[in-house]
Image 1 (cartoon, each protein chain N blue to C red):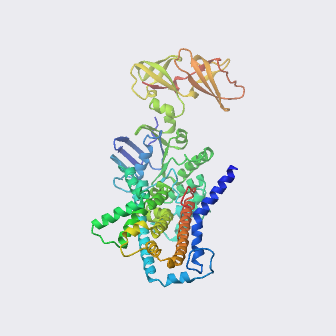
Image 2 (cartoon, helix red, strand yellow):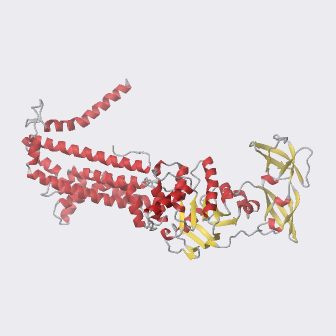
Image 3 (cartoon, rainbow over the protein chains, first blue to last red):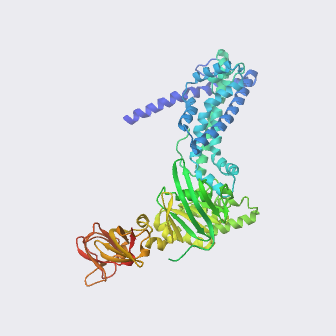
Length: 268
Length: 366
């Protein structure tokens, strides 16, 4: 009986988690302006409406620019930090690494408000660049967490062996280090991209008059007639996010396989 | 004593010191390693042997002193420009490359054509007994095969010195024994100087032309295996290499190259001056004796020098039996090893016995 109770618990949990997401595509294809059962019939109108809304395109473009920049920036910074944290000993290392990882647990609204205050005090005008800065701040810990795994999985003597066999430190990085941490780099890029793409709070505070996709969506919620369009957009975003996460996980696992290492955790 | 120092030194170490902060890892290493020699650095963990090997390879800067490789001072020369190659403890096989790509890794800058490179890689793999393994993925290899790939990868560059950092410690006993004789064969075949770091005294004895025993950043003794075993330079070396019995002794006098020594439990002994590695001032000292240089006398056997005692413990190994014997008048037990032969009995615990001994097998520590 005990086992059965746990099964029911697990089922309820999963329904609670995924039912709302399943509703997204349901109403995205529903031929009716209200979000309510019974369903009215199949339509692609809401997806067509997406194509003919210029403000949406602008927001999407902003979001893509921000997400790509954030992914590249966070991964580069994460690469340096992760290599330093796994390869070198330096004073106060745990403290420094701890502070870098802190945004992972800081309330995002606090981060957003303080960033806003700082930006305004510095006299910076709000733009996609301020959002990139904010997103990089919260994405770097994720990048470090992923890349630290890649670096600590890598035997230190591999780099030494390469130098011993005549390569310079620079060619060693290209021939040995980079190929071995590449799966981690790709995973980090994809995850940072995903986080940035649907981040709302920081984007909301720092966006000025250049909204990102989530900020645009939030604005649209004021118009009930636009709700099905948002459902359609949501459907696309969920699909993209899931696709990206699966790709990231694929690269992470392939990296482990190549290195002949056992799988220990990961995001999926 | 026979001088086994080879004619041409390929590596000269002069007063090599290494500090890590306050920690004095290498405390004045002086040694010459000859061309074509199989040389071992032997010692317990933390004695500085790996640090010294890595300093020769160029992975560690030394704090003072000089390392000459084939007559050239290696100060400031990075590892990629030294004529040494290393077999790492973890083997450090590149997991993203095939076996052939691993072995050919160092040839990238050799200016060889592809065909020539492939031939060299094939020959190197053939040499370590992995012919035909070139296309395999590196991570699919067994421990012994990885070791062979690491050897081929290092030897393909024809280094002047091959450095081996505990290369056999990760292998199981049977594989280790096989690789020991194979490494030895390979070294004779290529004629390259091998420097092996190991904490396994048996391995060092089996494989080396000469061994440097290191304790706490210093070379305690540098000698060929037989000399190291027969004439350890200190009690500590004697303890570290094989098994050795120690009995307190009194040095009575020294005259015309002979030492008169009184050993409680054995009696008076006359030793050559050469049997005492340190100063031999009259007074208390200690003698060292290997288990096989004491002999249990069975019924009816006799010898020139005999000491009575009692068997306190018997350890039977099949081919050998080890007895712990308390000699009459001696303060501690001695261990005696006897080969088990047809018709030779194995004594029981508590039996009275007699041991034959020979002063020529003794080492005296003043």
